[in-house]
Amino acid sequence: MSSCLPLLCSGSSPRSLWRVAARSHSQTHELCGCIFVGHTNADLDSVASAIGAAWLYDGEPARASEMDAETQHVLARWNVQPPAHIEDLMAERGQSRVCLVDFQQATQLHSAVAQEQASGHHT
Image (tube, rainbow, N blue to C red; front, top):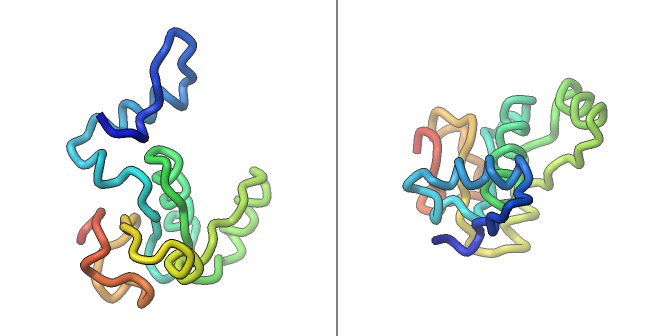
């Protein structure tokens, strides 16, 4: 089992149970601890996808650019810290694994992420 799986006990939280369910997928160990980032336009679906995936897989959410007004408003409304810029996380963590979310084509890949580091949706 992956070291990032929470220990299950009789008092498991719903969050723990969701994490276990998500991690039952065959790519679990590959996703655990990744940096999750969306496409180069940091809109709400891109940023929210990165935050959600990072929450499920004990990773780190990132954004590929400045966030639009809608995204800023939603994060502020729900008291969610904006993710760090991908460049900052890559500089801090070095050759980290990166999982792409809300991503459809290679032209949407941020220049800080090498294609061989990336895995995930439509890679």
